[in-house]
Length: 295
Image (spheres, rainbow, N blue to C red):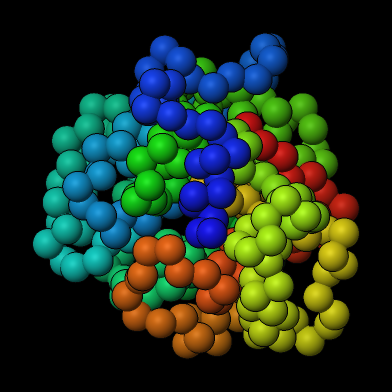
């Protein structure tokens, strides 16, 4: 059973109760007193393979811009120059971005359609001019034009569905220095979740673990993190601390990881390098003793 189908069943998203991005039903956790994070440098990485969904991506970006008064970079990947120019023009017209006191930098990269959103994200990271040990960002938000509308809306709504939602997530990071990554509501799944409930398919099917083991030597010569740290942020929408993402081990592995990813994307595929990284990136964070939590 494809991962998206499993998650749809788990979330119980029916036509009668489906969420709409940005509506008054935004997913919220318990109330937290806001702590200013305006001194942080924040980046939003958007993988916009499907131009028809650009409006939802820009709404998320604008909510971050309205919530965060400090420096903001917006980095967008596009498949093809025409789409890239359209995204750049749309962002340039946004009052939410061009009237910010904190300053906004926009970068649009035309990339190969390789390895789904993860492959595009790696190409974006590859294009950064600054790399560790001085990481350019305190906080990073990764979003993309996920084809499944229910899962896309659920993740966007819980991570950046409104300025107050963004402030809430940032406050969680400010209050808890051990919190390193926040995924969409219900999207953070730890081992052995689903393993005994779904005989075929699921987050930890043996083919997915085999893909992790195949990809790991491209990242490190050491042993792969323990199975007890296995974590997936399903669909790869998340907030993450910059120093936990933009690390030498992952950045140095990008050429080899991209070389192992096929061109194009087939909906419902599994056990590829992109799926391995969907698991390995949060797993690596947890193996450092840090937290990966849902919104």
